[in-house]
Image (cartoon, rainbow, N blue to C red):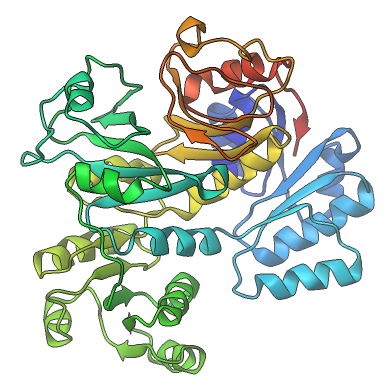
Length: 450
């Protein structure tokens, strides 16, 4: 995760210092990043002093150890009291740790806990079999959902102009197309093809109608869910499903872990067994289950288990994926939905780094594209002009505009941006910095981050 964040910050013009303990890894980072690499342990005062904390604007603690992240933030605060600090925390006791930090006077400006965000994301899509993601913008008034274009899709082979002529619900838009390794910010002549993964924007009010137009089934209730993996994320999702009255079976191979889980969960059936084994799944009646969530630590096991579960009759499958280069492959295998704690953490960190008039950041696939939500400032050169008359950076489009009055539109060329509007852009990652600087009428950011 730390490398992903560093790479993005470097590309956006920030001066970055990376602390890495392993000598071999330091050499690799020197080749990967245009950043200063400091070899050493981030929990040692001498190491952090060598990073020049006094000249740094922000400190991000993103190691694999919660204890190391908290301790390094404590050292950073003692060395530079005004330093902005971000820490990645994995423990399920994250809320208790927030209170502890407050009580002892350790100011951590942002605690990133991707498991909480992933749980929310799974809960949004668990009842929609054909949908990969549902993202919220403008306080939930604008929705963005992803789906595959299959050979049997009625819109397969049609251009966006032809789809528009078919009478889609008002305020809807195909905003992004992923085609193999290619990312497309689409125009009217673009035709959809089998295997495309598309993202469609809608308002909260017309989301169900857009689902219907795209041929998607949406169930208001989910009755049965299987979860494979009894780590923190599996438990968190099971708890959320229990609150909705869903019947949950959680599979865990570690007997001692099963006993512990059974003391935490109230109604979930905890099964001591291999949730990736066909016989086990058939014995537990997987056929027709509403969702199968493969949340083991190992990507390969999760992918294989998801493919098996789909073949055995699961209506929706969701694997946990840590390696970002697996995400395009997973989509090509026909798995609509996957979740990645690394991407969730990167999005949250970038949103905070850009805080101010940047309200949200959503990264797609291997960081190739973004949805960014910005507040239009009075001095922006885009304010007051018709969209058709604005020359946005190539590879960027306006997806939605939310007025301070609460009015939400998916705009066409005659629309205008007004000061104070929330504007959701879809953009290739390569032009994000240019777009933000032009829209906000601000110079390119540069700050030192450790």
